[in-house]
Length: 373
Ligand SMILES: CCOC(=O)Nc1nc2cc3nc(NC)[nH]c3cc2c(=O)[nH]1
Image (tube, rainbow, N blue to C red; front, side, top):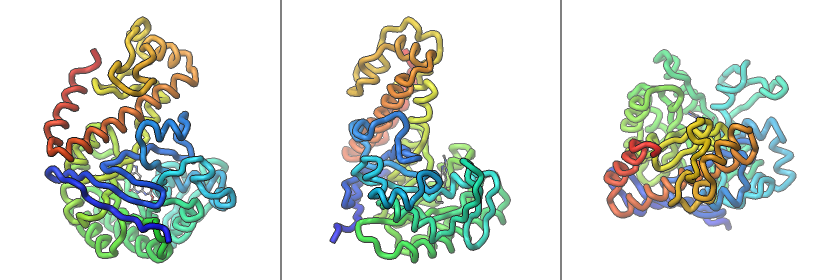
């Protein structure tokens, strides 16, 4: 019998929580950042490097994997962990968000989402049941309900319709998921930027007794203040003994401010996407290696980092690689960025354990403001 999914809060500091999720494939130290592995790969990284920077869990994307190479094919080949050689936990979002953003012709009905593949235009139908079936075929450890993520700004009645549809789909996903020991299905709170709808969504999902809860419908272009206000309203309505996952977030500053409001899990394409575009995250803020000012700079990105990409290569070399569009440029900057994000999470976890989160957060923020000397 696989050991069950469990979440323990080890320490708190204000509303910030230091916890641990225990699953058959390993432990997840929270607050946690999940590198995005859309097509079964964290772009430009070997999986042992992803583990090496300290990631406990990565994100896979149902929408992309079902289109290519296909969920049934991945299942025949032993599941996503075997396929991608990542033996630790994987969370798969069910791709509803991607369907909204990537696929042109998407139609939403009570039954599910119909859309055309962004690869070859072929028509697909994704029902809540099929979404869970795909995530189970991938052997995903944490599966997300199918939801409708409303783009903001939106009419109140539009936000309400999508929130209520998502609640009905949560029930169907819970039924379809059934009882998979050692695995979890998370619900997704919707409700846009409306407090009453957020509360209704969170309370209805909490009543379903799920193993974890995502806060969706945010980081879709709204100001940070609106996102944070929705967290102030939503988190208190979610069970304190279950993990809370803020989807698609975010910058280091977003993460600090969201941990302070009770969020335990994050995913964002920023560190990996920025790495492919010549942008480095450091404790002194962002460094754009495309900029000519780095052409003769012999200094590394961060001499104190334990990541070779940050410590062993000059900015001049990184600038050269980026300007020459050498693959190694994207590889080293992605490695640096994921290492920075995981170090940030490690600092956050230690600060909560020692009740110094607020002070540590201020120090980290000052470091960014000091700028890249
Ligand atoms: C359909 C369930 O699976 C999902 O992926 N749903 C979902 N995903 C999101 C991804 C997001 N990324 C961002 N910002 C970069 N915001 C997001 C919201 C959602 C969401 O509400 N719902």
